[in-house]
Length: 360
Ligand SMILES: Cc1ncc(COP(=O)(O)O)c(C=O)c1O
Image (tube, rainbow, N blue to C red):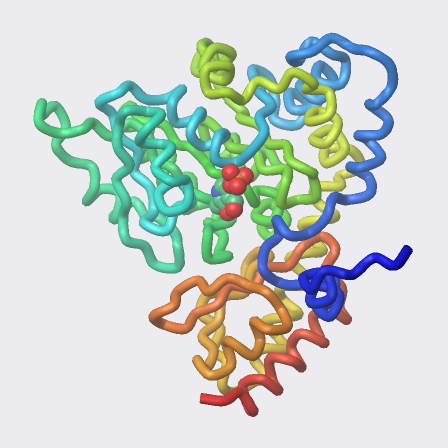
């Protein structure tokens, strides 16, 4: 029997196997898949009482230090929203960057779930500063205003930059002095820690972070993240918040096995170092193309660049990616644990040709 091949498969087959659209578009790291397969034996208790989950929670405690309480969840939006929910009451607010994933890309889930408000602050290169946060910190004690309770920073930021340790410490100090908390959206914490040359604890808890959304998926997992509290008291109600937030996995062992794999033999670091290196290489190649202007310092695994408008369609036809800013013709190109040097040079060559020959 001859089966007709659907057109979409033909088109997909013509595209390169790997693109630069998102670190979410990469597959699952083989060591993670292997860990899932290893966990796939026999029956085990559900909802986190299984040995795989208990083991990964021990690992989180070993890595981040005494008092650490980690909770496995399915995705990064939930990790952010539930972290914030654990730290705020309904009339309180979270100060974040105007480009924060929680503010821009979570469909209002934080506001819906918290009942409170996000207070977005303009930034330079995606980073909050104490000065910028100070401007948003007002109306304290005024019954007409939401009360800021949390500062949320994204590390690495949404535009591929990385907060320096001193910058995180300064924000943590500002928060602590006002009875606030510092939350870190660490969807790419592995890339940030690798970039800073710090271990996971030094890049988070030791800088004054109270709660971390620990990202696994972009780092090579199939879909597993964690909310990590560094002060046990803050996590007291979290079991209930997670269940009410629809993030309690029944077959949790499969999520835990993924996180365990990332934390074993420093897979998190190997993958992050690799994707960061690929982004640097991509930046280097793009800087050779005079019509392309790199927009932000490349400090993690993403390259943001202004490209001639005429080239966008041409590149998109071959390599799917997202426009970061349509108006300014700024693109976002992300590298992953599986990006190769050949991928980068082939892509850079294609971009170079497209900016020269693209039609108006
Ligand atoms: C900065 C940041 N935070 C959080 C997330 C988590 O998103 P998701 O809910 O899709 O896992 C993402 C994913 O793109 C992200 O880029």
